[in-house]
Image (cartoon, rainbow, N blue to C red; front, side):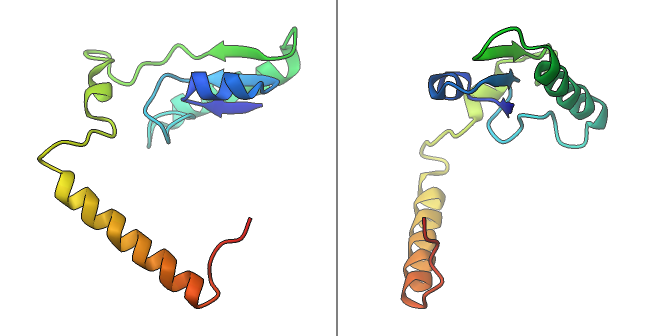
Length: 111
């Protein structure tokens, strides 16, 4: 069973059981700090494991990120514009330097 927020990607992979929550990536089991929501989503996954009626079953949770503006997060999620472009470029360069140093020191991840 997979809990996720990228429906198109996960369904394309053909997973057997999928609990979809329409939240920003990184939050497939609920909002940070909302234990009741997190328990409900995990419970949905456990129910899906025991009650799925066919392969490649997707169940969508009923939760919304923001009751007043559920699509607002989409406008800002992973946005790159003039206000953050330089900072993101600098962060990318720093990450590449760190990866190169790790590789040179024998600390690089291997697949």
